[in-house]
Length: 273
Image (tube, rainbow, N blue to C red):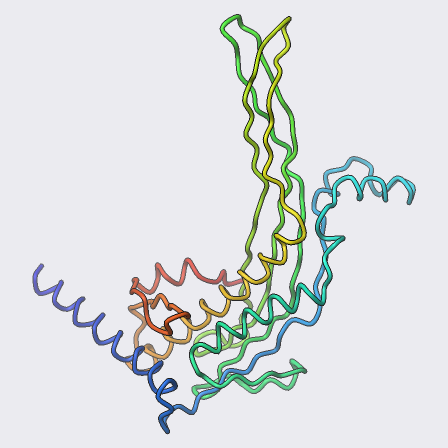
């Protein structure tokens, strides 16, 4: 057992050295820092209200009836300014990625992206979706007198979903998925029960379009951070011939924050489709 622990520790130390040297060569402007990241940013987005799928006979309604239903169930996706939303996501992604000091080349036409290899890392955002939906919820309890009390309510959710091609060493042409979701919360407090009826104080924490913009910034930064972690892990794999370590990257300090077994870290990053 001591020999095994020593091997694992030595392996992690070696992996950390190679990954750290990769970051430092860009920070120090060394002649060996020749890799570049080519990025095709999202240019448009899909607006989806999944709650409409649960409305009976929605497609058979008149246009006026449909508009009424949409208005009652939509509070975010129809108010998003796409140009602002995309700007929030793209700026956060590029700023976080730039912390590595690796040169970034913006590509306006995805068909002109270079082939990924040891010198070219590429990121192509193929689709972005802003999704809103309502979650039906119920709070219920039984009083000492056997009275069943039920309170029905809806909680709104917003999700930003992105599909991207993250071409590094082991993923050329593969599509990855990542999303970030926020939702409303409810807290109720029964004030009194009289005549078989309960009065409740209901407190909601609501979400709005400004929260959606914050999600765009957060997911943009997260995607960049995870992509750097992917680059580091694959760089070590190229150097040593095996992926044993996943690196948790801190973009604000441009350092490796901690280490994980590769399979564990990769599982928690992008979802491979």
